[in-house]
Amino acid sequence: MKAHDFLTVRDLSGEEIQELFRLALDMKKNPKKYWESLKGKALALIFEKPSLRTRTSFDIGVQQLGGFSLYLSPNEISLGKRESIHDVAKNLERMVQGIMIRTFAHQIVIDMAKHASIPVINGLTDYSHPCQAMADYLTILEHKGSLKGKKLCYVGDGNNVAHSLMFAGARLGVHVTVACPKGYEPNPQALTDALDDAKATGARIEVVTDPIAGVRDADVIYTDVWASMGQEAEAEARKQIFRPYQVNAKLMAAAKSDAIFMHCLPAHRGDEVTDEVIDSKQSVVFDEAENRLHAQKAIMHELMK
Ligand code: CP
Ligand code: NVA
Image (cartoon, rainbow, N blue to C red; front, side):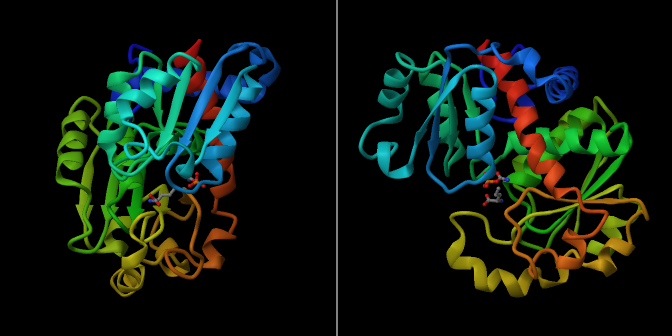
């Protein structure tokens, strides 16, 4: 990997992503082979938002590679308030070999990476969730056997997860359709960047408003919560706006008959997805969750070795 940090999927080339997938699959098959790959190295986990999967997968993942982890909760370091990002970076680089950070503004991870001499991994910002997209496409590869030319339809809010799915789709040649209500489209710069990257692979990246038209011929149907962390005050209003974008049996039936259902989790059952879909045979949400572990072990191995 050429990049020193992993802040967005765009930090990686298509070949580097494929290489990380090969490594992740080998780690999944032969975990013992890598038990000492980060022996004695420590990863700081900075969380300014809640988490189940990201915390567990990084915490356990680094230990499975022979390293240590240190969890720093929102109250602990109070990033930018108790201490500047610069000073946090300069302290941590003296004691640990990598920083994973989950926060609000994307600029915070950019600033952390600028000031820290050690690798910084983005564990979710308001703008992107690159580790999620890596685990997601790894899961699609396992279930579909290949990636290039497949179609993923993301139904719902044009948020951090949607951005990362577009970026990775563009790099891998996967067509990505985002079906969302007017006013909730992906960030215009994210769309421009994905469209630019897609020129090299022929991926079709598009934004539509009609979910039924969006999922036509899709191999993968993906959704996420309608109100992300930090948008709790908008949750009730968003429920009305997003109702037509619920992934239910009727919407699944409009996609390919062998389409898989994906969700980064946590899910709000009965809102963006019904029980019948998330609990169906088509749903691969827990494979996806497990693959956070394998994909991130590959990323940590490459960045911190
Ligand atoms: N998908 C995901 O990042 O889950 P957590 O918010 O629980 O970490
Ligand atoms: N879009 C969601 C993803 C959670 C993993 C959020 O930012 O809250």
